[in-house]
Amino acid sequence: MIIKKLFIILTFSFLCLYACTNVTKEKVSTKESPIEKHAKLSVKSANQAPDFTLKNIYNENVSLSSFDGKVIILNFWATWCPPCQAEIPDFIELYSMYKNSGVVIIGVAMDGDGGDVVKSFAEQKKINYPILLGNDNIGELYGGIRGIPTTFIINKQREIVETFVGLRDMRTFEHAIRKNLR
Image (cartoon, rainbow, N blue to C red; front, side):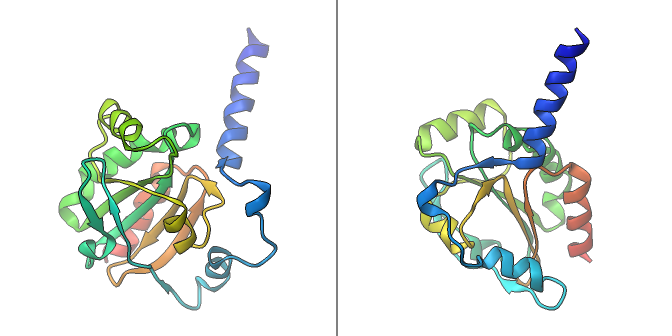
């Protein structure tokens, strides 16, 4: 019984630390990605978040620029990713708490299975924030998403001010929200 619990804890810890990965050997590059550049420059400067238009789970076009003037949590995730699934209840709660204060959470689903799978998952989990259907192009636009979840904090001026790769807790995102609402 104790060994089984220890195994479960170690497995969950491993998933939390290493995030889900969608990298294939063909995609691995030795070049420094824009995310890595951002991580090095985040104290000195912020990067403008690239605009995009994607379909949501209801087949409507949604552009990042339609949320200009808001603090944006842009979360790249997938339905099959356990750490991504672990963040969803926190995002649901945060969106409920802050949506009337100028905050939007946008989930970009990087599933290859299509919109029906994502829509069904979002409805089952009662996700209350916008879910968009991502693709490799949007991943490349944001520096090549190497692992999921990857979350960008975007301020009211549409600058990327923080980047998180891997599972984070609710306090981390709430701190980022409060800091950028000032």
